[in-house]
Length: 213
Image 1 (cartoon, rainbow, N blue to C red):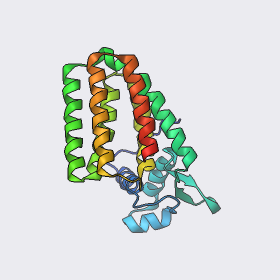
Image 2 (image 1 turned 120 degrees about the horizontal axis):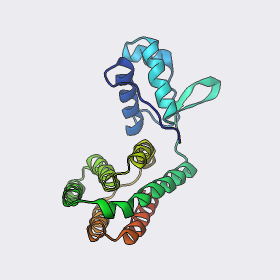
Image 3 (image 1 turned 60 degrees about the vertical axis):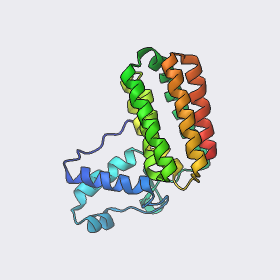
Image 4 (image 1 turned 180 degrees about the vertical axis):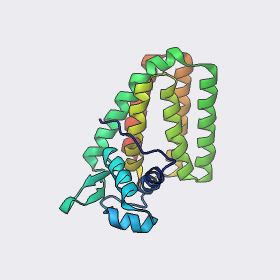
């Protein structure tokens, strides 16, 4: 997987990149939608040069792919692609788990439990968008306790595909609350320092979550 470099957020290209990326990850730009220089420049009232830079970055990240007649389109996450994303996520997060158990601090545990409590409130309140954002934050924070910067770089890039794979998935409250209970268990294993058990539980959690939606 290529590690993409995004344009600076302070530039026109960077601001456009952020806006288009958000549109893709929230589904406002749907899978297969065309994205071209001229239309994008007109919509955002900027020249083609920053548009070209933003589209190049999104293509490097895999969020835009070449379509018919060399036209860029939003990537379509197929079932096969979803399975690939799940397998990569398992490989990275499970790799971090044993080291996380060795390096975690009391502050790490407190932060993770705070995230789970927030998710529980969001699930009960029916705020699915906020819940999923907190879910991503929880998994990132759990992996980050291992202090493995290269692994985190790869996880961050994979995160966009994790988000895309969840677009349109059913999210009943009982499913969200079940996820918070599983997160509680993961933090318990981290606190106990049981790397093998955390690795096993984390893999089961990620794979079962993918199957549930």
